[in-house]
Image (cartoon, rainbow, N blue to C red; front, side):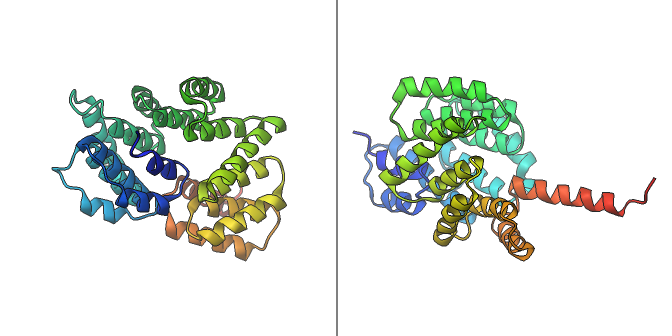
Length: 293
């Protein structure tokens, strides 16, 4: 019996309140299971923006898996300020013959490296992990660098391991959404809709549906989906990014778009999308201010 099955499933689907409730009430028998439970609960706290909660609860004497998650919390809280020390520390831990094979450490390292744009190290860490979650993360990284072909190959491996697993279903949706033809994108949409029917609404599922609708030029439907998402959680970065995209496409008032962007900057100032937008805006302002040649 997998004691953490429900907890993992809630986490994978982005149902963090349910994950916390499950994780704080479930009884676990072994130390290894307890550590894995604590790692998932800490990651759920990070996903909800509760970085300080994790930073304060984990000490230098905690298991390496929990120390890795604390490092993730520190990085997510201040990406620019913590990037160098986070990458340096993770490289040391991954190279260590004792800690280097720890699944949670490899997962966190792959996450941090990918968010820092260090895709080679990210892929290496994800590849060295043995779980479906490592494979799913590897697929996300491959899609970031426009390697949909390699991502689909990795997905086939996940399907051979467990075709019905929630992570396999999610990875299938990610890969199909990255396709260029409408029929394949519709397959991604159907997958998200099936997950919605089976598990209910979460930020992850609703944003997945909205992303498919946007890719299919269904902007009105995407708008309606995102309105549901933002009414559930007005502070979800993915929802706010998609709301900005839909607002642009539907030519909504600039004041509304500015409000969404200000909210996004408040809840997730280090978000790569925010940083890219600010950099592009600064470049445009500099070009406008430059005297003609």
